Image (cartoon, rainbow, N blue to C red):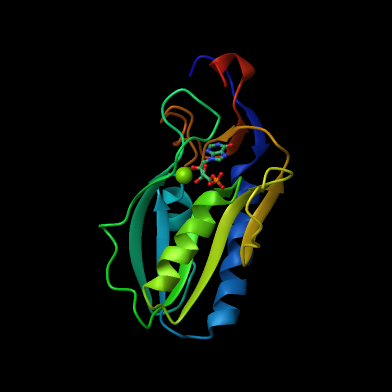
Length: 178
Ligand code: IMP
Ligand code: MG
């Protein structure tokens, strides 16, 4: 890493918040079987940490979606690759994403999964950026609201790097944003 990344949310703060989210989710589903559908690649660390705290009969499904290509922090066309998804009919679904920004990814996935005949579809995001949403939708579970910065770490990337940082950091300006 060329330059140190400013910490926005520490590893410990993320850990405590995920404990709280897991409790909220368990309380809502009350032992009912759940399928967590994680949107790759950004949600993989969130997925790994959250599911280990969920004491529910659980299945995991993965879907690839991306709207950023290479060295850009401006969203482009949404690409969804759903062929990894199992049959979701009659299942309670919780869609996980790393961050709710414009809202395009999550609202698209929610619609697509509802059309597949799921019993219920809810959404959970680790982060939600203030003042960025263009598609109105409320996530059912949200870890943190953050200011409008391009953030990396804990699964989130810039040009496919930084995902391994254990905290959420603000991408240094000099990394060539835009
Ligand atoms: P949306 O469709 O605009 O809500 O964007 C959601 C997707 O964009 C997320 O799944 C992220 O992969 C990506 N994204 C949005 N903002 C950021 C950011 O600040 N850092 C890294 N990825 C981001
Ligand atoms: Mg993503």
